[in-house]
Length: 162
Length: 424
Image (cartoon, rainbow over all chains, first blue to last red; front, side, top):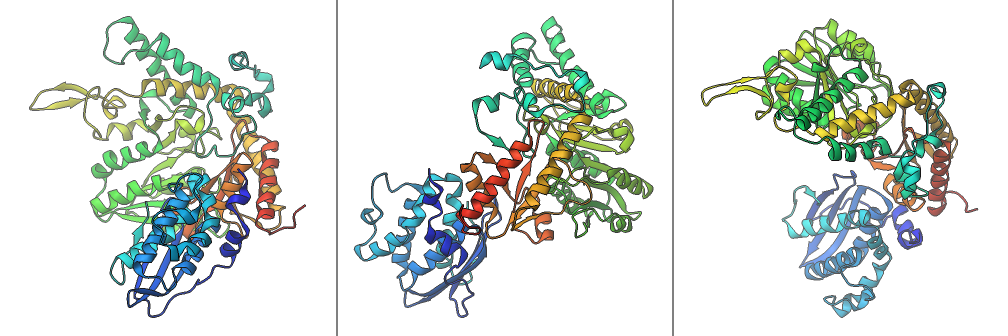
């Protein structure tokens, strides 16, 4: 197992210089995520307009994996419908837990509509996490928090991931 | 390999004070089974020497039966070994009498026992319990639960910016309402040695009882509960080379005698009728049900192992290695060591600029270096230090300077991977 599979340049870049790392005035939805085992914390802000993610941002503290995952998520989620966002979450979850099946490339995973394949590929650098089971929760924290934010009502309460 | 494991390298009394960790290491089968392992997480749990592993199996093979019940020889033998283990713990802590030792699952259960048995009997609303900012969750949460239940106030003694308990501030916190001071002997995050003798003097002068958490101290220092003068002392067997699931609560006889029972059941009673039950004297009164007999015997074997090396020698070894590790890590650019006060033993927590502790732990693991990363069950201390998590390396009798060299190399590898130092 090569550490470079986990810590690819794009992960290190997003970990060090996260995109959309800011509060979001006018957010319609937000949620706090907390991994009590390691202390990582993230807040996801979403502005939903007409059923689409008009903007999404985050703030928080965590390891390179959790910050990079949150950063990449905010990039791929922009302008997606809530249904598309949920499809991307399911796809991502399969990718990092290995549930998508060995030897299956990210873009051919069933369930991801053709117009989201590009976004799916952009998440591929995080797939290395599946070889490090202890780190899967780092990668999924922001995603579970996003899901809680848009799944709940505006001002969703604190969320704890498993 | 089995020949290697069977052979117990002699640690003659003449070598006390200067044991060779490389020789001691040969007594720990885990290192033969995991060649290359650099184990720096002993503060979480220590590895087990062959004498404990084999001794447990031998007890089950030769002497096992339930205790305090059977009139047959095997049960009598098992009871004798179990009670000899209690004597062994009492002797190791220099308790005045074996009846002052209650076997528990670990320090956490010992603290909960005191909170639940002593607390309601001796505390009233408005009383105060003092803990320090250095405490492990296990020495905070049971008191917090008790405080909520009884209307008692939890008061927190601060540390100074160097990580040491602020003794002057502690002294000022003590009032006639202070009934208990619960404090660690060696801090699990920083390795800092707390001046518990002074803490006990100050607390007793204020009329408060004192409980000391010896989880990180018993594996590393000679502990004399009579010299300390504390009322309660708890530790876990698995951190001092013994089995998991066993530990001990020491309580002064007068204190223990005044405490009502904790859990009810077999072995803690004298007579039972549906109308009324009368209880055994301490320590039996606090040990309902079949105890972890093998665990207690394994713990006694672990304490024998430590005594063979010499506890003073262990302390010297761990203090020297800790000094060496702090110096070696401090010398690296971008590495900050968490303050531990004037004296620390066995544990060093640190940060690496630009690399989160969890990333460090994953990268270290690829180099076969096992450390702990996280809040170390001390979130209030993390908040005080303004940290979310730290990387923590901790040592045992089998650790040496080669382990520290591997740690330093792993830090540099992490810094290279993250582009923080030029690759060489």
